[in-house]
Image 1 (spheres, chains in turn orange, cyan):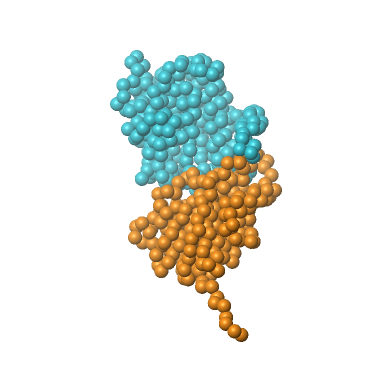
Image 2: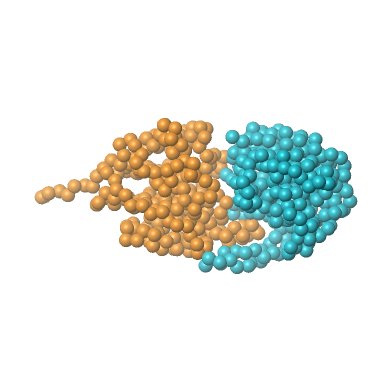
Amino acid sequence: MMRRFATQKAGNDPTEYEDAAVVGVDIVAVADGATEAYSSGLWAQVLVEHLTQLPIDYRPDPPAIFWRRIAAARAVWEAQRPDPQRWHAKIKAAEGSAAAVALLVITRADQQFQALAIGDVIIVQIRGGHRILAWPLDDPDAFGYTPPLVRTHGAQQPLIQDLQGTWQDGDRFLVMSDALAAWALTCERAGQPIYETLLTLEDELSFAAFVTAARGAGMKNDDVTVVGYLTEARVPAREGG
Amino acid sequence: MAYQAEISRQNPTAFVFLVDQSGSMADEFKQEGLNKRKCDAVADALNRLIGEIAIRCAKQEAVRDYFTLALIGYGGTAHPAWGGDLSGQLAVPISAVDAHPIRYDQRTRMMDDGAGGLVPQTVDFPVWLEPAAASGTPMCAALQLALDFLTEWVSAHPQSYPPVVFNVTDGESTDGDPAALMQAVRQLATSDGNVILANVHLSSLSQEAIRYPLFSDPLPQGDQFAPILRDNASALIPPWVAPLGEVTGRALSSSNATFVYNASIVELIQLLNVGTRVDLR
């Protein structure tokens, strides 16, 4: 079961939202477009769409498969981005776009998961009410203004973070863009974890109320995206008819 | 904690540039590899900086008003220094700055070649400030203009990231002691902290710069004006300590003054870059 909620920065128009998320069967990708980059909302969207294309098995060679898909995504971004007219748009378009991204692929057959990330979109694993994983960052102070980013341009890309793990029936995952991720880790450090709240959000209204309260309490004003994923046991094979 | 306020279109901040345009700014920088009048080099650096600020505020074709920029020249008189359509205006939102350069020059910019390298490309380079150098150095009058503008600004934007004032000069004030006006500027505050005053003293000679000295450090004998600029500059604010420490290769702290003495154009640009580099929403 998956739930996805998203909202733009307070004071911004919804069209200015520059995160993106794709939630497929057993796969989640969340990207956070860099504010100052050219057409970064489009890049975030193209990125998550390419990373979640079938087949979703990254295990044979996670980084290689990831970068092959990025190469295809770059071509699509270049073809779809608006044609720049003004002097500054021409410079920014030539410099390209950038986004942080995290990808979670669940494998039911052997109860494993594959995670890939660049930057400060994070994946959290909850078991029995306790966080057992926050990745690739687990320290709220580690969220800076210059995370590594996947870029549309340039041959030098940051090192991809690559993690394989296991899950048990009933484990739950959250994939969150940076402002919420940092806030969730801050709350946890203060002894008031909010993972359960995030996993049980009922609807857009309750999400909006949560975000407003969190921003009021100190969460950075940024686009917010969160996907919750509840693992379910593999369906047992039936015996006989 | 101060200097943490979000900068957004709803909560913009301001940068104020006070530019010495007195006669001595026509002297050439005699530093290695540079044969340019000081006024040309400063105008070039500020045009480039303003362009970079506009680029950072640009979203597709539009430029978002995260900043208002005030440009004040002082040479003979203190006056708004924007040229072209903006002549006579003191402070201008960055979107209007972007829309009204005096002209576009052609410059070479190193751009990504897609294969890990950089290639030179010709790009438009907007020009807003023309170099000028004439007459005396009415720094007090310039500070008064800045003070009047900033008083209004902090009243209208009480929650904003505090405005930053860059005062770039190569000489001594010729219309009085500017210390009281500098203090008055620094005493203005928003809820996020006091207005920041950075004083940069330019030297046309190849002398070693004194960068961000302690307020207690000795300064060169014989220059009566250096202590005024140093003592009345702001202490380094926390967000600038690490990046300025990196460019100077020294451990700095909030005990250091936001002041450079005998600065080259490179040191001016370093400070301008750090001082205008803030996180946008």
